[in-house]
Image (cartoon, rainbow, N blue to C red; front, top):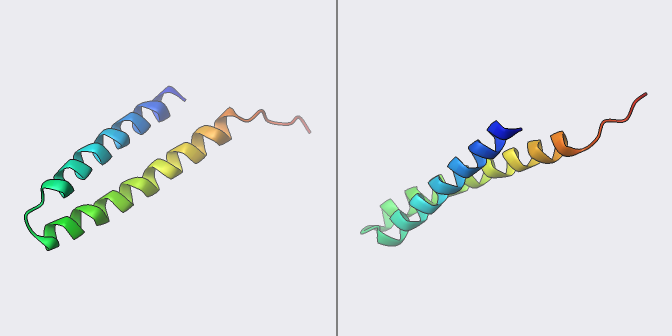
Length: 62
């Protein structure tokens, strides 16, 4: 699970960088492109969090 946390930290760093770039974007086209990338990163973060939750849940013995 440690690697998932590493991935999550990496993705959060990417979101911070993309957010800063979007704020500084000089054109609307650039801003939209960066926001689109932010949306993709948010989906990746959500998938990582889902996987962390699944791995943290105890499995029931059948």
